[in-house]
Amino acid sequence: MSQLPDISSADWLTRPETQHLLALLNGDGGVTRAVGGCVRDTVLGHATHDTEVDLATSLLPDEVMARLQAAEVRVIPTGLEHGTVTALLRPDAATPWSYEITTLRRDVETDGRHAQVAFSDDWAADAARRDLTINALYADADGTLHDPLGLGLDDVAARRIRFIGAASQRIEEDYLRILRFYRFHFTLAADQALAADAVAACSQAAAHIAALSGERKQAELLKILALPEAASAIGAMQAAGLLAPLFGAKSPQGYGVSRLEKLAAKCDDAILRFTSLFETAELAMQAAQTLRLANKQQARIAAALTPSAHIENADIRAALYFDGVATLRDQAHLALADGGNDAAKVDFWRQLLQQLEGYEKPVFPLNGATLKQAGIAEGPAMGALLKQLENWWVAHDFPPLAALQDELQAQLENQSS
Figure 1 (tube, helix red, strand yellow):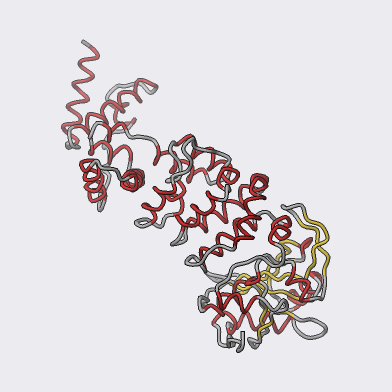
Figure 2 (cartoon, one colour):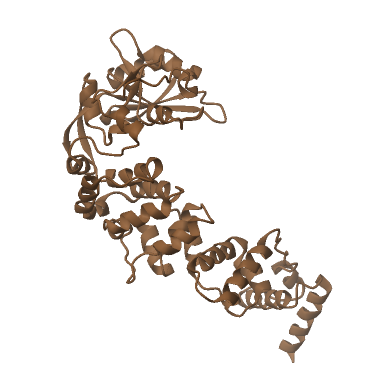
């Protein structure tokens, strides 16, 4: 790059909290710089005032903690074995600033999931252990840029996403870098061809993805699924053989990338995009559990892929009441993404989506206490009667309480006769 960009006025860099930390950690034998995404995104013009800031320092972790604690900065030893602490500025604010501060490192031993590191004061060695050239950029407090490998700035300018050195070696150090490569490519360079050597190395190492923790895989995948180019990213990952080891579940007909492509054009919800990849709730749940998705997210996925008996019976009133707006909206988006030539089906789901807007679920006016006052003993029979009355109430378009009480009396008389 012939002329270095000027990032000295970047919001995140001029933020008082950032400057305060850098002042505390520089001088007296210490050199501390911003590193990685905040620098990269600023050069690209993507950074904002809220951009997260990571710092790299020549200071050992104990010295970092000592300096921050002496200045009454709240510091958390989040990963001391890897040289990382987290500083919290404005900890009592609604949105505190969190800074990860990591001592310069070099890898001693890696197994694709964990790394043993040695602390260092060598900026080039620290840069060389990072994953992608675009992430090996550093900036001083005044915005002076440092590109120790001499590759990052040119690659950022060209939007060229490539591993540092041999792709296979970088991937062997941490197999999560496979997913990170696809995320960064389809975030920053979706209109360009994937680096052939990187794709080959990712494909060759695909099986190792299965050994990564579900939480780490989930975090990267959901970021990919939230991208505007999510369908292209997932399609490229499928072509490289990454989805089966990632999900731990395989559909006989592959994954629904074409359905994802249609859905993504209308919906940016990462969980629903994930759901669209699977033919059945069973397959989706296997993958959701592999990725350690939250129970609430798993329940949503299962509901979206479970056919509604009310819909099959064309009973929209009951579907709205019993299945709920959120589930029906998910099902409608999936059904419309399926496409097909069934115009009546497409029209049905489009109309249903319109009906969901502004829908308020009526409140069933009876409960156990009401039935107890009517002489019904608590137990399974009471529960069955309540459910029967609720079904009647919904089927009759939610009549007033008086009509429901008449129905209750009629049913009690039928039971006694």
